[in-house]
Image 1 (cartoon, one colour):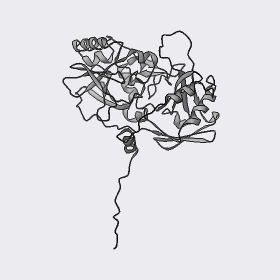
Image 2 (cartoon, rainbow, N blue to C red; image 1 turned 135 degrees about the horizontal axis):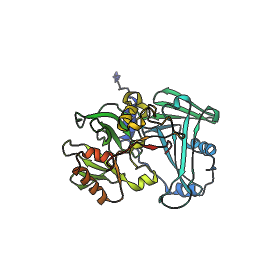
Image 3 (cartoon, helix red, strand yellow; image 1 turned 45 degrees about the vertical axis):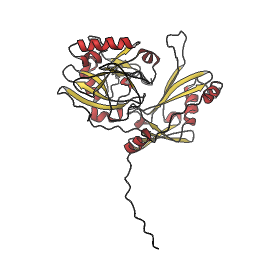
Image 4 (cartoon, one colour; image 1 turned 30 degrees about the vertical axis):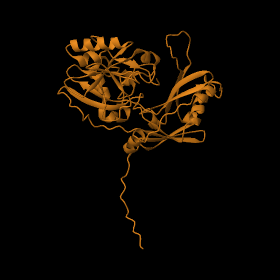
Length: 349
């Protein structure tokens, strides 16, 4: 018997395909072991006061390859060490990674941010002078080497296509898609009549959350706490209306997408031009990413175009106010405030 084997033409998987597989049905659960946390609290493996020492500690623990999903290129971590819970990130910032720079920032997490007491917080840019080497295989694949170890950072490649699930109004412009550190993806849109930004849930991708309906036009996500207003005229458009105030105060993963702009696509989205249109006072003062050129410390325009709440009753009242206004989108974009200037955020959140 002669056996014949047909050679099948297998599709070539792109970076986007690989990311979809990792985020799809084949994704592994994120198991966190309390044993590891407890043992970590007893560890004094690294000096938290010294950013260089702690960077070496974190970098040595990274896998050889990692995927960076948030669209401002933050690779986040939580480290239980020396009786503290440290939240931090290693970032390959667009415009600086090309110069061989890597950002590193961390702080002690506070469950109750109103408590008195100084919390540990450090940040630093690492470069060749610190023994860090940064090379690029392509615009979305970067290798970082430090003390004999190399880690490959795969940056998640977002689609630049406008939304397909709903139409844009004649006075609306699609700016970009973003990937928040909460795991939720958004569309950033701009109203050319009122000159304001607003965020809409991207349901063309998997939405890793469940929704509770408060009113016929209000949904709250169980895990993230994001509150959405459902536009009755453009279904299924879900506009991000409000986020939990405690998340804003804690600076945690659920404080909204204001700090996850699509920096890797800045040449296409021209974000600074739209920032200057929305906030005329920043015209000529920001670079193409929205960072202020005249500030002593690095800071950028924050597109926190939504409100924040403590109770669900506040969400309902906020949406009632939006519906009663002449333009619900503008009301939401300004957090219920009649006028608003440009808010700022320092890097390394």
